[in-house]
Image (cartoon, rainbow, N blue to C red; front, side, top):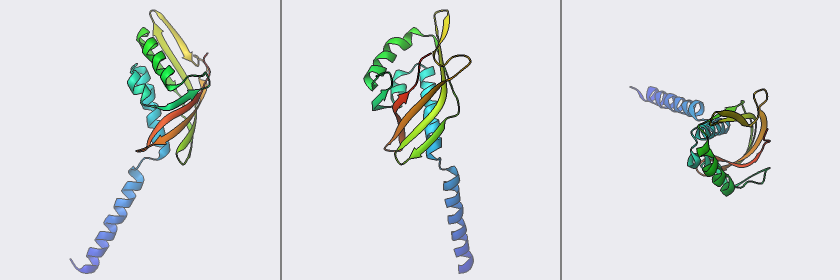
Length: 151
């Protein structure tokens, strides 16, 4: 192999590596969507620790709940339900540095004994939900604030 073809090969390999990083590296929006999916799965599995791993210690919502209050409520109430189901519409996400604004529609239903009902949204209409998320090292997005209505 001559010197020119060796340089061409190295440049080609570098360009391919950069292209692979660009294509395969997830965007912040994709990371947020994945966090939201994981949060929904944790709720469906009734895993309080995993749910809380998605909330900031500074969490608050429009109903006056804090991180600790949410944790206590979940620990007390989730064991009462045999099934929790979460349906989320595709979110709208706007990222700005280390914060993100997320808007989506949400339905949360659960089975308690022989009864099934909705906590958030209803059969016909998902409830509008607005989230403010903050990015924590090492690139982990957490819910800081939530605005939603019970039905």
